Image (tube, rainbow, N blue to C red; front, side):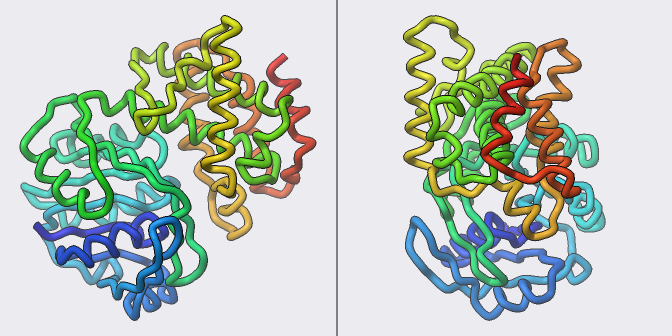
Length: 334
């Protein structure tokens, strides 16, 4: 099975490196010439799993030949439609597309290629682009792979065999439950981004934890209003506890945030990284996705709505990321 990875950023290049090292036939599609040439010579992969240099077969989309077998979609979410348009000419009757994107993109991709061509993969680990040809894995975790309709199929098992060469891959009959669980974490990290701090710094003050606990609760209530049974993130963190109002659950939610600060404390929120690099943030596809679904279901999500507003203003320079922005989020919460 030939593998084509669309998006050779941190996630795509790390996936490509492990698959290449495992002897898989892998091609990465990367539009930026400098990065493409660097990873061709040898992608430097470092971080929590150690260091390796792996030359990658990186090309432009126009250099592909179809039909493609297995596509791994790893672009930043604002560039999803661009990638789908690049994929279109090379789709054959048996092409399968696996989305590893942040947010919940399966339905968008299925609307272009049909749900029968789409699988979803929730990424439980983090990575960042440290520079052209240099990718850093910032945390460890697994993949969770599922069909859109929840069936455990032979093709799902086949793709699991491929992804296992990257990290341990779990199969699920509740893909959207895992998607919303990850979305709650991503919305939390976006909220931390408004403060201009690492996740650990943003979650340290008790005042901040109370606000961010309510932010997570908004996401979970929205998921439940959409009929989703939210799963534990990475089989450990149960975000549904944030919606409980008894004293024991509130205390437990604070402990979960402390645990996240310890485990992911050095993570620099994606929106801040994107803004510093002059890139579009993913806020409309993460926090914005939650806010839009909440509006449809008439769920109140004032903190997430304010986070989206602040990050959009950060993109234009109207607002500066600052620890003082916690007061704005508090005010939105009422």
